[in-house]
Image (cartoon, rainbow over the protein chains, first blue to last red):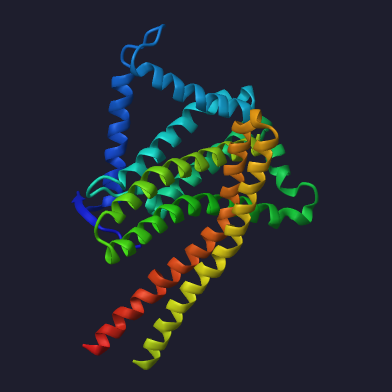
Length: 213
Length: 93
């Protein structure tokens, strides 16, 4: 769980996780700009893939949340894209998965927490939101609060544990069999697990928002 | 020095037990969910997509208990074990 400091900016240490987060952010921003520069009414080439992804996520969100959920599609899509790229970054040579660090996943989970609770406050008002904590009885107040905290904790730990645990297993296998096998396992942990864990995180985010609305 | 060695051994055993025992429950549960999903798809092949997403969601939530035990094991090794190993190496010179 130690952090590798790569360099300092104005005396502030920058770890490899933060560096790779910035790289992924840059790739996503530049990629979004390039691929959405000249969108056409009748899609050609790569626009098909983009429309497929946006349509898929929108269908998922609208199916679970309903028509109110359309406002959350950009947030969910950004979350999914960032986590997918972050999971894949671990497969690159010298690459570090930012999601294999608890700080990143905790930040993402807190983000989902803020969005879902903020949406409820905006939808129902502050009074009804606060009343939800003493529902159905006043005695259940501590239980409700613990439930909300454990949601965030398990959301963060699930992504982190899977990525970090995969990295540890890969390291151990690499010590025993340095040839061929780690490469295959790298593709398994990076590609397959990366996609599955992204889907899980995104779907749980949708469900958490839907529960609060 | 002996105390430190015993503590390190206990931490290692504890971390191993935490993961191995904690993995039993989620493994059984996830297998059960997958088996039931296969049954459901066999009965209603047209609902395959929605069954698959529900299955993955259910497995992800089942998995969190296993992830908790993994987190405990990591905490034991990296937060308690590693400093002790460093101190033992210092004592050994």
